[in-house]
Image (tube, rainbow, N blue to C red):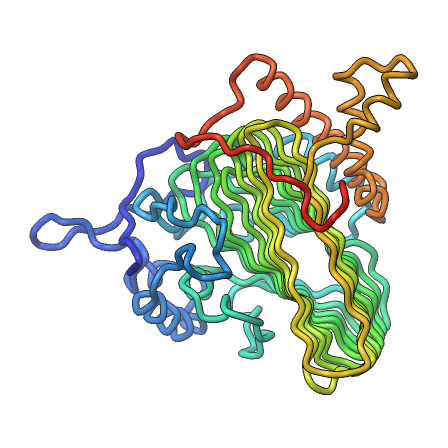
Length: 471
């Protein structure tokens, strides 16, 4: 499939405005993703050459479909690019929800950046050891490489063409605490391309909190976050996703972990219509460690889609992945992951675990772990489980007087809490837990009312246990 040329979609824009495509001499709309649209973006001439090259790559690309393993089980065939147009300029002041403002304050972040529809609109405060730059100042031509098929796809090219990069540098040997970036998606009918790059110097220690949120707008967001962890550095990354139920997200998050460095990533995914994140962590230095954790909840007819790569390029490296989620109503969860051990990466320790709880008969989860090992003297394992709540657990709680509805709620929250309790920021963990309880209660209420939500497709029964154990 060639890219479908998008036309503007009428909507109630609340802040920045989506660009209305021009018409040719015959009155037919031209693509909104064009060289002309790129020229209207802020950032100056320093970004123009890079953007024009990227838009040419996009126009020459083919949109993915489910025949590719990278997109298997996805809903990519439903994406209609004609609904969206890129945001080219910032609008007026944007009001961030009080709950998110409170979260940023409670996180005790020493540096806070607010990004609206991909455009940096507010640097609220900055720690002395942290440098924040955007636009041409954030580009040095040395972006970290991406692993796997996503490196050359149409969405990567679109992000390269339409993003206004945000770069955060942390000085070597410093401990500036938490850096928080709020990505607010505010305009309906828009296509937004946030891009964040965190560069952490040798021996430094920092946490990056990224929050992606929106009201009920019908929009497309294609974010990319790249993290470089210097020698001996310790970096924590937390991504909290609370997008509206009509938003499509196709995200890329990559990290490069150098010698004796440690990178720990947490993802909390609670919103969106189709919410996809591709996470790649490359261990490029001897003794590097990467820990990847995620908790997710699907309700209504939404799809939560995770693709992961744990890439071991150096000797004596360690990676550990734990993704846990629950699906309700007619929602779908997708997980495919690979542990890749390259030649020269002897002494690797790599573990991958994905567990899914299916709460209702119309929900489903697909889980496909993989190993690719090209060296000896390694220790690698993967585990996958998909199944309903255990009847033994229900019986245990019932025997102690817990009603069935309360028992299912307790079991589900306890199942997901294994990841939430490991989030280092107590305020963020508490916020995620409250939001999780809220979406769980709404899902159960919808199911009880006989209105579980539908994408217009037949419901799919829950799949049996795979991998030989229950969640």
